[in-house]
Image (cartoon, rainbow, N blue to C red; front, side, top):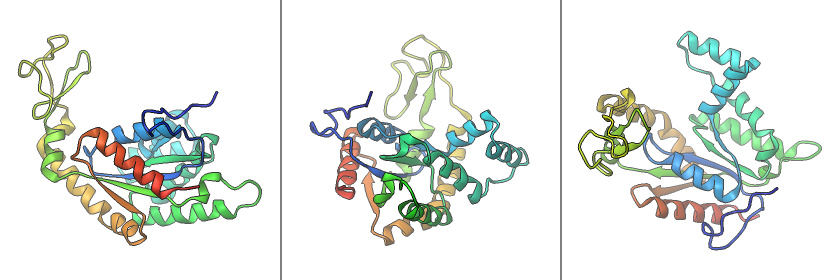
Length: 247
């Protein structure tokens, strides 16, 4: 049974056409995960996260997974070649035929160059070319200011009992430090303290600055103001996808 695009998302337009590759860029806390889920639901295409690929391959004990586990156990970084091989393996699955969302890939210019070559190889391959390869990637960068992201992440509080998430700046509990649902005491996750968040943001900026320039120079980058309401961010993302891919 085919999944239909929700009519409320695209003004009544249902789509079973080829969407092509969609690349999501944005700092931690920019809202990539929220938007990726909306896009995946609207177009019935998979969201592909490199983190999920790592965990899946390690859990299944695949050859690539064993290599990743060994590298991580030694505290080393996973090489571009290994990441590329995992992504290539995932893109061969049939649910990617019409398109897919890449979340967390590419992270470097080298990975972006590999992906460009991979798409070209799929267009030229013998037999049945991958349908998504007929379209150039639409690259969406969700842009959120440093202070806003700092508040989004460092302001998070979670209930260890029911899992509900609050934010002391934007969505505080009725009673400070107490969950509205079960009265549990809210906690701060270790990765959400301000010092850790600041380091993550600096690392992201160092890593992706050249990548953003790479796609901007090719005319593929669409910047979206991530400080707008979630629905408006989604609307802009859909417009960019519709304008960028017209097959």
